[in-house]
Length: 131
Image 1 (tube, rainbow, N blue to C red):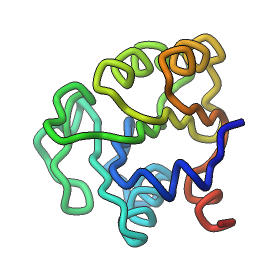
Image 2 (tube, rainbow, N blue to C red):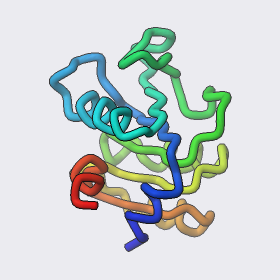
Image 3 (cartoon, rainbow, N blue to C red):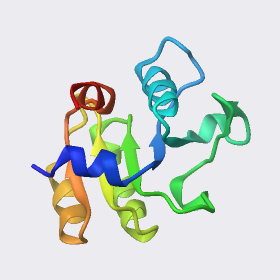
Image 4 (cartoon, rainbow, N blue to C red):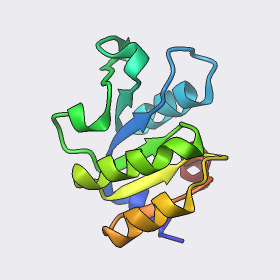
């Protein structure tokens, strides 16, 4: 298990994959919370591309983001994670974070082998609150 405190202390730019426009969805709640604690959160959702969520432009995929992304936080089905992990490696992210119930050991191993810290099946908001 990587050092969660280190991930959250040293990395302040998050690409949040699967964030929703629905303010009641967990992804939107986590995004707003992380923004309130000083994180730059860039929403990624192909269906909302070009729109804004919590004041941030929505991108179709993480490889479209122009600025440096440090953490890729995933709110997508487990079966979609491997392709996201490949893109996280491609953009030089430092960590791949899979939210509650998002589990893909193959993607986790791929990302770890490429040097990323990996958190699987855990909530970023809950972990940040515990710190």
